[in-house]
Length: 283
Image: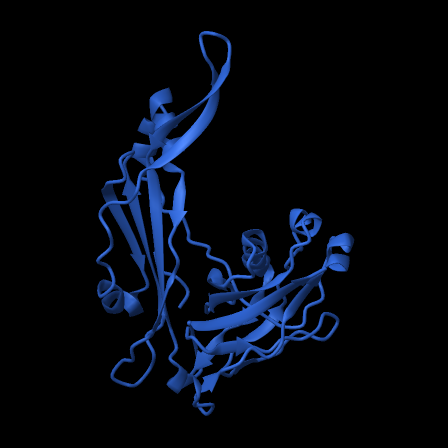
């Protein structure tokens, strides 16, 4: 499967306040210039938080389709159905970001690669799948030496013992580990404004203040990093610097789902571009 074809560390999006026309270009700079600010009032309206800066996100890896015959066979028995349910548990590793290599003409070979490592109940990898953009196949091969074993994972549930008491029972289950790699336009190429056009935000992200964090009085700024693709969406969003509160970090990343962009272009062709942005939560 081919993915839309941009990264790099010091790409900071320049954001506009809500109510201001979208379409602000990203500016490459070494500093974080403004913030997305999510306030208590924005949660109360249950609509849009005040947006003072633009960001990117979220990992949206397409699922691998099972072969039709195998899928039909798997539906025949309850045991097979239970096995499929176990295998649905997914562990997402932090995405890898790399500067893309260039071809003979000096054009950056940007793109994405995804590995899915299917592990048994003991954590041993029994099957491996890979989806890679053609432009980055050689680059992906250089980082494809992934672990063959992971710590086992358990699924727990409540059951009634013979005495009638409720007890917690845990069992090891199969799981899938997902690793993504993004090869984005390097900073030296992005600095050439005669050939490079920065990504432009068209729809802002929609971060929401988590109710539990509000109740607990949690505040902080979460710095999120992601890659903007040629299709205008942000992928591989993750926390680069924590706010100090896991729930705030999770909602900051989740809020990037709504963001849309005009993709970055090099010599008129779309390329992958990395963006980094802080999202502030203030009561």
